[in-house]
Length: 156
Image 1 (spheres, rainbow, N blue to C red):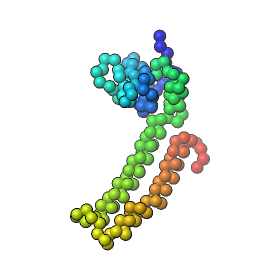
Image 2 (spheres, rainbow, N blue to C red):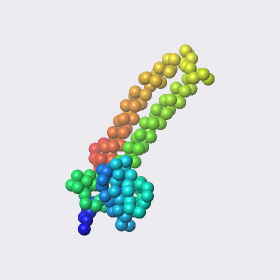
Image 3 (cartoon, one colour):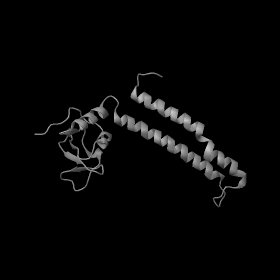
Image 4 (cartoon, rainbow, N blue to C red):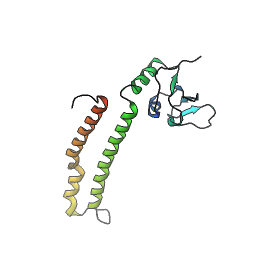
């Protein structure tokens, strides 16, 4: 007979963090084993499955002490899915910042893709200087957002 953790996993993002070789059982009784490439092998399915295929909650079968601790950490009060959503939002904000900068640079190019001499100073400003202060402000905002996730009741 196998044992499971007392920590129920309620989100695919948590499964994504488990190490290769981890065996899980979902709420429907399906058992899967995580592969080295991050997918899940499930008996009866010829192809590897994604973590969102399982019926939640999911439990780890025969967890090692390290895996049990990992599950406890990422399913505890500072939920990994919430952190992942916030981090994805931060990455999207940063990508938009760079995309906006690239659009501004493209506007300075002529039809051949060259930068006319009259636009070189603005090109240099956009390329090297303009986002330093904005980037610093954005990193400060990122820090405040992450601090709220870690300690929603705390400080500032």
